Image 1 (cartoon, rainbow, N blue to C red):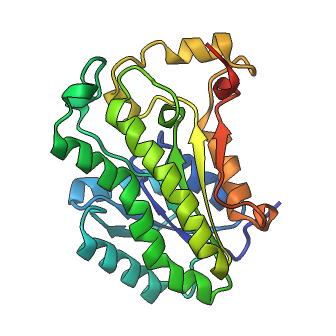
Image 2: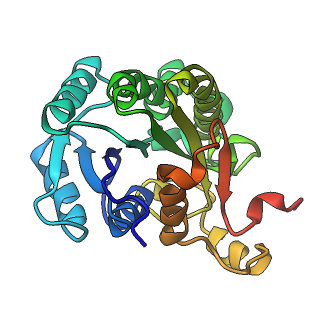
Length: 260
């Protein structure tokens, strides 16, 4: 069933074929969407992203972007607008924190720059991208913006540290954007995906037992899979979620409902 036939959008954050962004892109494409991709600058990063997304679609549209640079963001959205007549969805699946501070017992020692860099890349960039996407989305009658969060934004996860603070900021940013952009029929939501062993999660200390814990404790008695999040992204990008905005949707096999 092609829920997204005729829809086009931009995905920021595909690092490899194990990332949540890849699974989102795969699911959106399976349902008929056309996806464009932004990757970190540099030939190595371009090759890595191209190798991953070519498993989804041939000859993908690719553009470099360092999301911490306003000039790069301007160039990315200008290039997209020049090549695509509309933007129906935007997927923000990027985050950053210096892994030195993503260890148990290191949060109070986090230096100012590391703290602010995490907030900048992991949360502020959603607002920066939404502001640049707004005009084109509004011209097309609206759209859907989604970002990736994690339960560490609400509860303490050993070693998640500043990334948990950044994800809390991301979720709050989502609500404020949803309120402001709603007048243009632009919906903004976060997906709180469960622990998935990816390049990003490998940087966090204290995650070694999470897979086993999910299989033992999660209500569904399994860990989350990338496809679970991909299917939720299809829902958010489609007209099925036309009345949903400002929400944080858990896709973690129920781990977030447990008390301990």
